[in-house]
Image 1 (cartoon, rainbow, N blue to C red):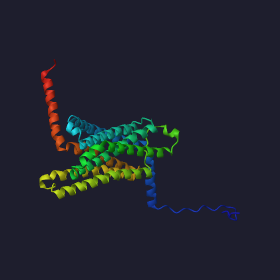
Image 2 (cartoon, rainbow, N blue to C red; image 1 turned 120 degrees about the vertical axis):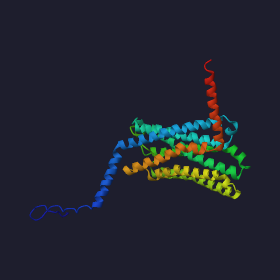
Image 3 (cartoon, helix red, strand yellow; image 1 turned 90 degrees about the horizontal axis):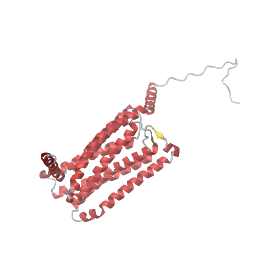
Image 4 (cartoon, helix red, strand yellow; image 1 turned 180 degrees about the horizontal axis):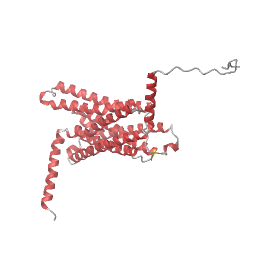
Length: 335
């Protein structure tokens, strides 16, 4: 029989007082409680969604305007329309506009508390994730195509023309299949009723360790292709004497592309690495990183599109033609 703490007189001795907690542990406990409270307040998530939706609207408006102008210039010229680099450029710009547009939809659903089914949130988020990966893969194809055009100009032309559409189609199939598999893994932990249940704040999925690891792999694969291609282009230009004082713009273009790429990759790496964490600091950090990422998306069409000399000259003629046609139409007046 286990001994009891009752004395001979039948009185129960007083409980032993616990030693006071250390001040540091109390501070840490308060911080943990504050973070958990912030995680439970939906107003923070709604505020975050509102800010992101606003930034997406600005990026979508600017990127779509530049995309429409560049695609109009390319499609009206038969020479540009058949070149691989301009096909990839238009594909890249369409991915940017689609990504920002889907970001407006997804973050708008969260900010307005639309109470959409979880499955609908997954579909919109998965489509945005797919076109976001398409942005980076098209950048990798553009860099690799530039390397082939500079280092293997005679052998690569016919080869690239024959496989360009098959490579794009295969890449999209891999991206979509990967995201479908990740969503199936995510849905295996939820019931069917939970998937079709309406949620005021669309939940952000694919936040687990396997999804982040696969996301890192799909990020480093095109990034390595881009960096290797640029390094080989630089070595070839330095060997052939192209990168001299008379051609400073080539080095400047490579540098601008690398800076633009870092604005894409660094926030994405931090997003994937940190995951969804709580607290005012991580909330502010998330918005700052997203602002940098949105800035990069917004100026992507300018860096990769209108920085091109040929597109600049054709843009000038295209604008002059539009202004001249409008002037002639206005001068004639109604018939």
